[in-house]
Image 1: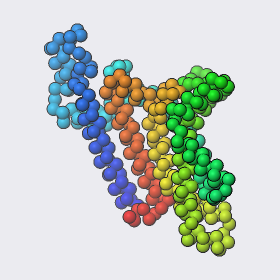
Image 2 (image 1 turned 60 degrees about the horizontal axis):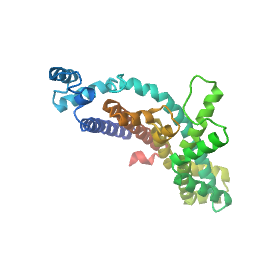
Image 3 (image 1 turned 90 degrees about the horizontal axis):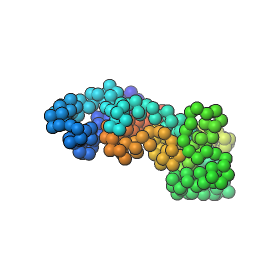
Image 4 (image 1 turned 180 degrees about the vertical axis):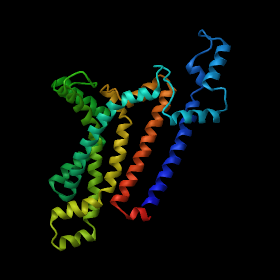
Length: 314
């Protein structure tokens, strides 16, 4: 197992190194970075522009600039935002709590609804429970998040007045804060819950049709033990993969949901940086998103070998 994890860790490091090269190269394709910091003719002489270029290190070869940027990034310095004039790292940390809270809530709701319904649909195959579950999976995956969010606001906020429409307040009572979480969480969890259901159902059906499950049933093992001890454990790998990557995706900012509900998270931060051509903030956001995905892949690999030891042998 140690060799397997070491190999995977080295692969993650190589991938992260490649990502930094791609992110840095893309940041330089947006034009001369100096012209994004300051433009000649707006109170700056050519001499001042040359001095600023030297101060920022933009007069050095590109490879040197890359390693300077990489060295700063390893110490947590991703540069300053061109719009806010504040460190990118601080801006990301300020927005992270809002995204983490929404991500964990959406991930928990999707997991707690999708996986049990998938197991129920597979065990009750070809019954009304199965048809209801498959219908939910079909509509859940076919419904766009932006449409569902708008409809949810129209019904529960505008027509019924039960829930607030948007944003994440911090200086209000806890019950009011929870109300602000309900609609974004449901919209965020709706599609992934349907995906969980289909994935879990397919994995469970494959395991339930295997020979060792039939043998266990023939020996008189109770249905509860067959389903939850033998079948569910062996059907967990696909849902676990989706679960880890889903959480990483949520932590990176569910952009559409944050945009609809004016949620002050990482998704909106990255989108605003794109609108403002704020390349230090955009590259910092992209780098953080990619690294989170790589960490998620590594964690899913660890869970793989715990659930199925045959993987480490291959």
